[in-house]
Structures are given as structure tokens and as C-alpha cells.
Length: 273
Image (cartoon, rainbow, N blue to C red; front, top):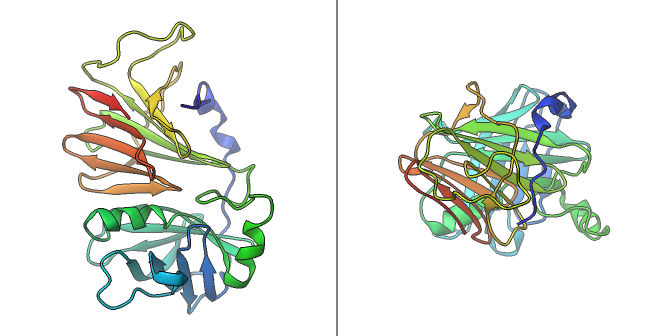
């Protein structure tokens, strides 16, 4: 596992780049995972959209009767420094957008827009940078600059804090040139008790994984990411950023990459895989 360079990062939160709310252009966009975003009726305050993952040949809508294709239709409103869509049938299910130059970003999703493993897999394909369809192929070929799930500005990390409903597990998504997630635990029966020789700080209560890691791991740290004001990830909800999904349940928090690597945390036991 790649070491997560998070020690002392709390003091540097002021360096997080802002995301401007602009007037997104109506039309078709696509990310590096093949997910299609169709914007219509766009204005500076809102836009209507269809977001489609898993359709054959990058189609803009799911075929009738398809069970392995995820389609979200909605109306996104300007909120803070981006746009937010809230599912009218489930206010815990949301999609967060930001405009970025000629393209768009799906920053994250939270909630459950369907059921089944195929649906969860398609949710992982929603996040990332979107470019107009006629420009996407050239951008992807530019020396790997547009990797799946990465923001186009490699210098601007976006930090997203969240926590379990009890507050016992606090987590942070760090979204930049790469994507990683870290979760700290307040109370636990430690499953890992022997720190590595090169760690002389805290160890055994903090876990992390990056999108391209082959295994989750533990974080040697001298800080905390606990934030009482962080977003609460309700039980049964999923939060995804660029190839990593975290699922909150009464039994604990599980974060894993789209390749199946990560960690599962509960007060009684913690595992990495």
C-alpha cells in the first residue's frame, strides 16, 4: 500500500482550491470510464441532466429492461461552490457536481440509487472529470492526463470529511491527482497491536486505501481527521469518489476500491484486504 501522506495536513486546509459555480453548457459529456452526462436546460443556477453508466457503446440512456445499467435523471441546483441533485424519493441520495472550464466534474455521490452488485459497480463509474463528447478522446490521449476519477487540475486537492452516525468512525476523502480515503476510529478493540518499526507515532486506529492500491493498510499518524461537523453518512448509504466507495452500516464502515481492496471497520474487529 502506498503511504498516505496525511500527517500534519489538518493545518493546511486553507490551501484547498475553490470550485467556481459557472454557467454549464448544455450538451453531452463523458468521463474516462464511459459514463455519459447529458445536460439540458442549463443556467447559472441549475440544470437538468441524465447521468448514464453501463450503457452499451456509451449510449446516453439505459436500454429498456437493462439490469446492469444505471441511469439518474434529475434537476441539479447551485449549492455552495457546485451543484447538488437530491433524489426526490430519498433525500439521502445525492449527486454533487462542479463546473470546470469546458467540462464538468461529478465530485461524489451519496446514497443508494438502486440495488444489487451491478448497480454498486456502476455507481463507482459516476465520479470523475467529464469533457464534451467531441473533445474527450483527444484529452484522454494526452499522456494520461485524464485518468479515471481524477480532477483535471492536478494541483487542486478536494478534501471531503464524513463520519458514521455514532461519530465513532471519522473519514476523509482526499481527491487530487490520485484518490485516497482515510478513516480513524475513536473507540475500538484493536485488531492490529504491533506497529511497524518505522512508526513512532499513533498506529492501529487509522486505516487507508488509495484508488490504485493492491491492499488496504494502516496509517501511521500524529494527527486526527475527526470533525464533529462533518457530513453524517447514514446507515445504508454509500459515498463514492473516483473508484473508491465507502458504505456505512450498523455493523461499521467499509471502504474499497473498484478492484476490491480496502478495509472494513467495526468497534469489535478491523480488517484490511
